[in-house]
Image 1 (cartoon, rainbow, N blue to C red):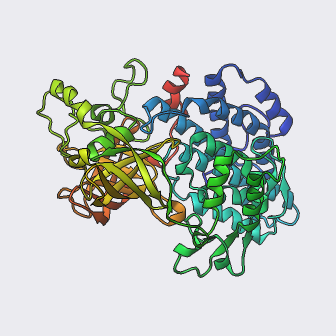
Image 2: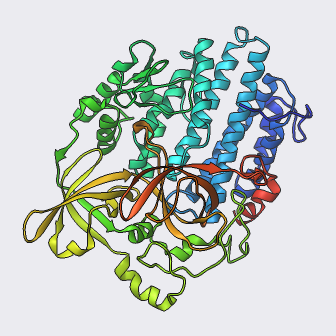
Length: 559
């Protein structure tokens, strides 16, 4: 991992000791969220470049951290309950929050590297444990935010988390308990298990409130799980501490050489006892969340997969309608253009996370997946209500991979094998994406339909070839199912798009480029691809730290 290059040894705002930093932090205008966040951001950015001792860095970080997390707590309502396709202002808030957590994590990592480079681990074992624990916590918060917004995990997320565990294991830090008033006191091993168990709980299938509740209680719940070095195949999850992947169900991993296990048997027993009412615990989880955790944290072989169950299910048919509802019922013209910052002040300026936007156009919501630019907008509005429909159907049985539903025969013209579907249960936080695998006539009034779930979370984009402005296509970015070993994928209409093609994907929060890799599956209506993100040489702003004044100046004004 590359750490930032250090420069001078003195900070411009304070002396590098706890009392001086605390005195500075106490003078922050806490009622002014914008000014406080601005000063803290610049202070933390400057600290990242200082050449100081690990003691000075840790004292400064510990004095700043409560104020930073207070700011993050104040910014959280500005992106919770936002649409899946984030408006640019909301996306800027998310980037600022992520930058705070990344700065904290990287500074704690610098302290860790300083201690290790001087072979001071025995002498400063508690300081090393503190720094590792803090880095694990900050990276866990970053992971939580990604799932809250149904976004992909940050690159190298798991490599960084596993690196912390390797240091902790090597220097016997795992059992050391570290106080944390911001996110809960726990041992270093529990801090490592928190993101592992969180991802293992399938957070994409939870509401934002359920995710927050789970993450908040995991510093305690994780005490009932343990990392197992021998016989990992006897555990629910296994993981490679040398890799860059999250834990996976052991049944889904073919080659487990070098892997460790996460034993959840005691954890399952504790939650089961709570569900049975055997414990009067202030930290008792909501019953619905507990049931989901019991299933998610149990081995696949221990579960009944398909079972009869009647549920109401909202369903959209076709890529056009699914794209519309996944985008929070936003039409294509809203997705294809960057939103103005405030009352048009931004005037089409691209976000720092992106450099390229398609030219402004009036896109129609045409049922054909290649968008017809010639159709008048009046006709588009007239047809939209018919095109973008959703139905309420009843399931006959359900499984981890899909549904078996009853479908009215009167709507049979709407459905065909291989069709893209949008799916949402009553309490689901977002639309899932699936497809029709089979259709069978049950009676004159009813059809039976088998549905496969392709992804429990997706994002709507408008796609075009990298070197062409037109034509454009509807695209769905399918979220990764980490514990099932499924990567993020791209769903496109089944057109003449070859492996290796380079595309630009656009939504209001910005654009990014990717290259299609292997085609994983296809029907006559859609194709699903693996992909690699493309970072251009002149787009270094995507991977390097930008000036705070340039990147967040308009955000701080609007806050």
